[in-house]
Length: 116
Ligand SMILES: [Zn+2]
Picture: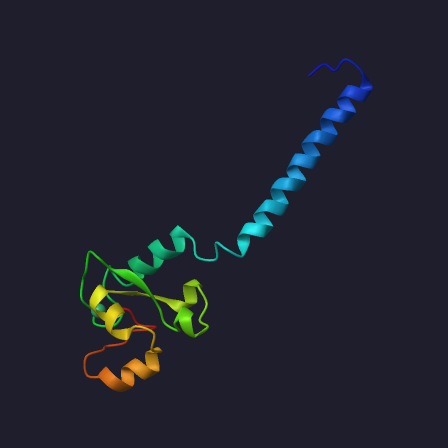
């Protein structure tokens, strides 16, 4: 691309490298918020075959449960998420998996590492 002057060329290059730098900073800033990507979620649901990780029920309304609840200081990270049907999700509420299992262990088939 022809430039009117060497200065114009320099200014143009500077503008572009600036923009590149900005974009890199933006990415870094967002990284903290988008820890769980849509791809992560899809992979998780696929791993559990579209079934609830707690009761094994196939459910179209499958949601994501925070194994260690956000309200209790859990993190929104893929490692803290399991697919759960609305019923399990509601029953588990803000209890941790261990607390819930203590109350309703007969109803739960926890499949943490070995999906159904
Ligand atoms: Zn369930």
